[in-house]
Image (cartoon, rainbow over all chains, first blue to last red; front, side, top):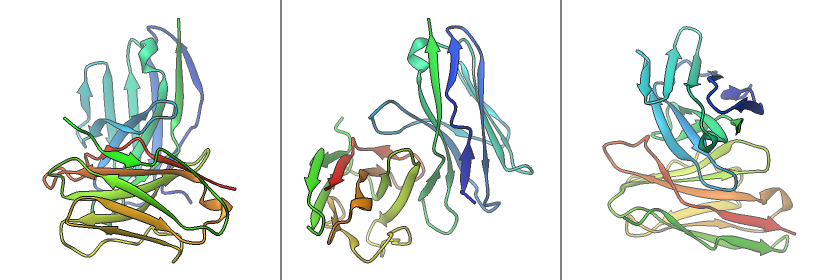
Length: 111
Length: 114
């Protein structure tokens, strides 16, 4: 079983739409959760951390459900520039700050 | 400021040869990580250095892989006797001591083993 699982998509949405991505993780000992963004043939970049109480950063909202081991990312009012692959990331317990990455969900925002 | 740099950006090598990949982390970052991303796969953790502590090598796929970090800064990932399945993008990341999970990635080295 993969440590972090995501729907690979692609999600094709029109500009201005709201889109949600989900992810599940297998290790209940994980304590830290993130969403990274990766543009085509580029390196991943941290988008936002995910806190237990849920958190918002502009048009982006992240939620965590520890009981279900489930993480979500909501993007409101999608922009063309949001087109990218979104990586769900969870810390690897007992490995310091090493991270386990999902394979990513591809988003294409169209005019 | 300067981000994480990696060299070379691309490397093509013949099966069986050794390769060295270099990573120069963000100045002042105490932690350094190596990951690899194979085509269609997620990032896979390889090895992690934190300050002067012994590295966490738990992700290295075989004993052909090794890494060192000199002077707490630059790191070199070495792959001996390369195999075709080693073809991937090798990504290095670094983080500060107080925010270890906020990892800043370099542009990666694309390794192709022919």
